[in-house]
Length: 621
Ligand code: X8Z
Ligand code: ZN
Image 1: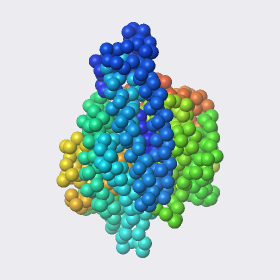
Image 2: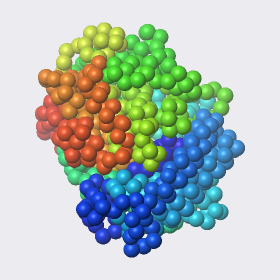
Image 3: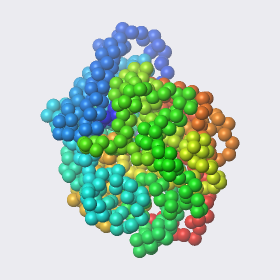
Image 4: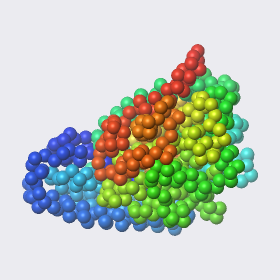
């Protein structure tokens, strides 16, 4: 791809850790100094470039980029919904054009480096430099090679099939995901898990070459490696950002460890202590998801009481005959209940809601804004179940964000930081509570306000946290050359063991390439955004619930139909990334920092219960 997600990145924030009035650049959040205030258009600086030159430059660059982005989106959409040799090459060409323009324009923009500029112009120039998730070398041959490799790896992933003795035909990722979710037959789980991981083996050599080329591209833009570009999009230095992420993880680690301890004992009860050992990581194929990143498919094993079914609405969706489009209508209904707009007619005509039977597609869910105006679409292979119901809200969150920042200048058409983009739809999904589901007729009765709904949510959100860190911790080290190709798999499993407390059933050698079996690695989509979103969405939820006047535990609050909250969300979306993310956060929540106290408060009733349950057990791994 490099489609929406790469483009979503087309311009996250960069301020290279300089304080206000720093020697090289004026960070966008700094108020203009007295000298700047008098420095009107055309004023000369020690170099030859002027403020007016910078303004004129950006006037040229923004429409040029916009045109190339749109061409790239179209080519990428066609490729992702119809993978062939030709569509792959067409998409690669469109990527090349963007890579070429950004590298050229970023080089030209260095002439404004020493110039004091109004904050908005400086911010745009900074964003231009980090606008690519995949920068290419200036050499056209190498650029073409990188674009082909990147598009090729995503296609290999999209085409992946799993062939085992358990089924006559080879299965797609959505089919094996259903087996991991529903089967409790351990050998079958292992077979499909191993089968899927085989699809990544052919990517191994390509991945190493992609790292070389992308790093060369990053160096051409003045960065040490690609990871430095990705980490440089958060209004702080890369090092400060890493420390920030670690700080957040330390806040939530005790909660994760208690959930892990509880999950392991329930899995021991199901599969025996020989398979699930005391004091050891949990086998990665037993957690109901290919990457052990969400465990909610195991509610049958993990529900605190005997009422696991009380929160299950898959049956109701099926009984009502809700089809994929009907699922999306529920999602739209939530957004419009907040006073937000209806999705355009073209969304319903142009989206891909189901896996087509006659061609290969990239099924990993994504949201698109093809023309950066209102040509919104989602691409998903929707199954009528709870997981996809939630994912639909996630995707529509992207579409609504895209729609509301469309009036911003091109370089500001993105979210405050990428975690915000990922969090928006999740905030809505947090309000898909039993009481909401009862209101819209998907649950018969709300049921007792026990811990079951909260456990369901923890298996989705808390279980995810360490995985949200691992993917980029692995890539940051790979891009920095700390992890060599000969150590790819070893480093991957070390991180997964350390943070998630999961491990493969059998040793995984370097002939394999397990990171490539996760979509975002071959597709070059940064992943820390999801970790940030997992923290941020609870901050939003807490603030919005306060606005509704909700009393009682946070997990019982739903913002459904609340127009005040809708206005607050809309205002944040309209800002795009024109301002540093801390300002956007402040406007929406009153808080300026990312902070895990909200997610901890949300899960406190469950955490108290988990601590009791775990008494006497040896936790940790
Ligand atoms: O990739 C996604 C979305 C598209 S942005 C479906 N997510 C991550 C994943 O699937 O691994 C959402 C949660 C984490
Ligand atoms: Zn997303």
